[in-house]
Amino acid sequence: MSDWTLCIDFGTAFSKAAAAPTGAWSHFDPARVRPLRLGQHDNRGNAFLLDSAVFVDQDRVLFGRSAIARADALGGKRAALKSFKTLLSVSDLDRALNTNAPLSVDPHRIFQMRDLIVLYLAYLLAAVEKARSLDSAITGRISRRYAAPAWRGGDSAGLHGTVVRLFGEAEAFRVRVGDALLSDAGLDLNVVTKELPGAIERGQPLDMGLIYEATAAAAYTSIGLDDNASHLLVVDMGAGTTDIAALARIGNRMFELPEARSTLKQAGDFVDRVIANRALDAAKWAKTTEQKTALWAELMRGMRDTKESLFADGQASVRFRDKMFTLGARDIERDKDFQAFAKELKQAYEHCVAVVRDDAAARGRTSVEAVAVGGGAGAPFIQALIASKNTRGSRPRVVPRPATPDWAHAPEFQGNLAPVFPQLAIAIGGALAPDGMLAAKGNVSPAVNVRSGSPATRD
Image 1: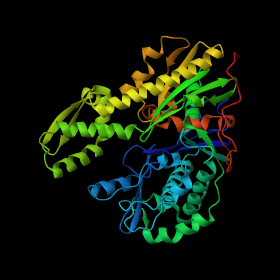
Image 2: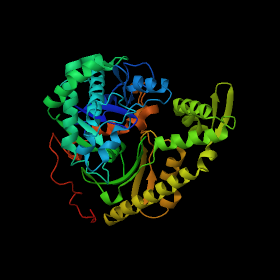
Image 3: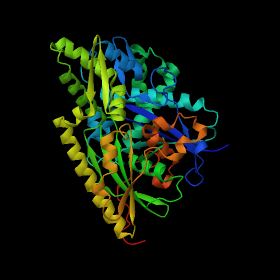
Image 4: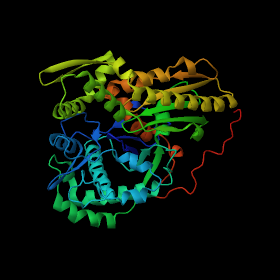
């Protein structure tokens, strides 16, 4: 029997989780990495991905894919609450949590943002507990941690106390309502309004650690390699933000170079909107507001398949009712908003390269590794950035690493892990990382969020 470490990646579009035996960093065995099937209670979509969404209906509260499906069925008249994660980047989190939910999200005007985030976290914790209980390999004591970006504009470690408090309130609510959270029908609104206030009042901060997402990426990228560089560049393109970070390792210690950190507000959701707008431009027959609204909704429902075709083949065929048209990757690249994003992304990445090269050179290193993670890791423009000759010609040289490591193809995973590994990478890396890589432990925020105290000298 082993003790286990479980990491939750609370994502903008999807939440993920993974577990690994405590001490796996020193004694790595890929067969014992356990990505959790959070979405297995729902036959729609990928079982490893849990949609980050809550929908307040007339008399029920829906979660995950059911929440998104209900919002879609109403044709844009109402909105599911998504993108919770971006709320954690605000400077005054407590004030944001106490803000009333928008009328489009909560027509009853009874919920604050805190209420809805606690409800979603309860759903997430219920999915984690269900998936963990169905995996017979995960036994013994379990320590938990969550992954978050080290946003420049917000103090992620300083907000740790607030975040684990939210998780604690969510756990208290989960215990009260049980597996009903995972039902397609969601929860009765009366049950929510009866049980939620007490759970928020009684909930105690959950004992969880915090690991920065870039550190988690470094952990999964470095593990299992016979040779790897001491410095790593990470480009994490999710749904809500694109985060760029650099890390350095001295012996068994790993730390971030905060001067290199950048967060861009454009990411997967932004690219989705660019694609949809270009498709609307291509659909000359869509002239009325009704036609354009219907086409937009259909495009968003099928966006994942459209993007996969665009990224893999350079073009995608879009069908709507009796119409069909083709959209090419060059159409996206010519979009002015996309070009502005690509320019800003390139500048941020090159800045990160310069910072990490300076640190690596000062330590006498000859190479730096670069890796892309997140749902957008496979996008051609992200891969082109990682492999850019403009950043590989100087010393220390930048060596791109694949988003999916060789060990993800191990036969034990039966071909299920590798296709979705970039989206699970942060959760897996967070579970593998030793305690020394955590930004915060337990339920108390650190007093100071400092760099490392290690000057960049030759080692």
